[in-house]
Image 1 (tube, rainbow, N blue to C red):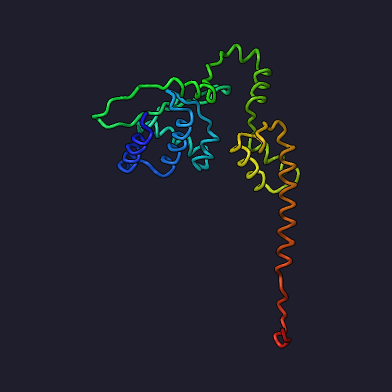
Image 2 (image 1 turned 90 degrees about the vertical axis):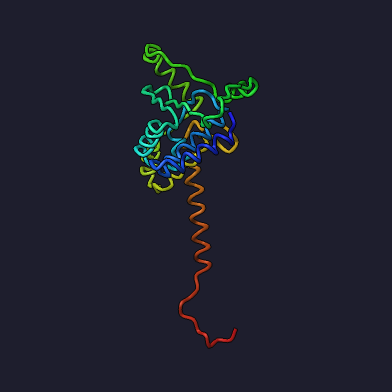
Length: 226
């Protein structure tokens, strides 16, 4: 697929489509980036939280409305998943002029790279899920841990820590795919939260010291010589 040509045509479509608002465009570009990173597969598994973070769409209702309307408007095909063990999928439509033919050529080397970094997950049979739920959950947590924002906020509240820091903590590590700066997967987010707050308190202390240093007396005697 011609990356530049596709973007030129889709931008033109954006300008002519009066149904769109900035959230539609931002979400489409976030999905397009994931599609590009996966080397333009026929179908793409998506992560709602990651797309909301990338597109800056703040609410779940806004996200679901935008992605469904992008489907209705003909920009992509949205295939929502009702299986908690499998993400939703999208099929991106290639934009081209009426005189251009579809380019279905695939580079086998790029496909091997994409298969390595973006494996395609197969549908999981329901009986297997029911009989192996605990083991499946364990495997998911070991390979790609997902921590819920509400649980983190509740933990911060119990510790009497600022809720704003809970949201910053969740947003930061969600963007890092719950990995440390060294690339290690975080298995104990509460320990990471303790370190986060320790840095926060240290920063607050340094900030207060700097503010005290900059304070000057309001009762100045301008009669004294310098």
